Image 1 (cartoon, rainbow, N blue to C red):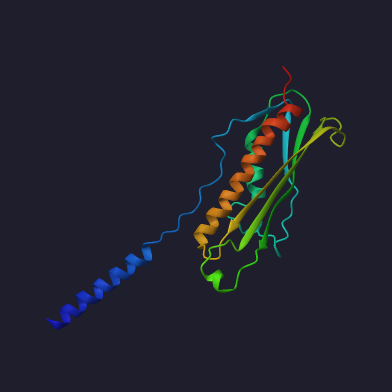
Image 2: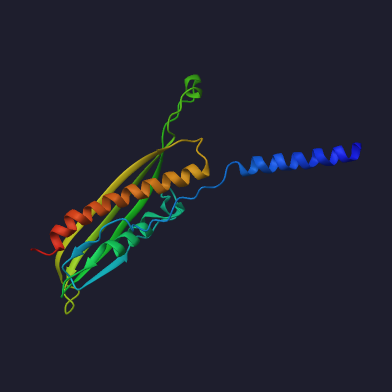
Length: 196
């Protein structure tokens, strides 16, 4: 009888431990598809999207650690949003920068620091897209140009979990893409859109 009780106790302990492990599931951020956005019509026959940004992959630059880095999100956004509705010319959308720089913030190491919940890091994000209009016959001659610049920042705390950091990275990128899309709907549309 004692052996049966020991087996039941062990089984209950294993189930309790399993329950503790499963209590904090990983909740991955969703994919950025931009399916909810209305495309921006541009008066050209063709749109080319090019990513010229080369992440340093070291130092304070951390954009390559994002599950959806800003340069990939910007590429997806531009390809989805820019709709060629004209009969001539090319519009090149060139991603020149899509960086996220991490800055350490000063931390109060005194007694009061133990009772405060101040941010310990600041992420500074920047996306710069250059737009060039050219003809099919002379693609190296720029007929018109424009730029869209987006900047955002976000504070992080040292007690954030990996899951919380991933969501903070996602939120920062999402905010950046909102700003880039606003630029497409104003600067790009006004410069390269159809004039009715």
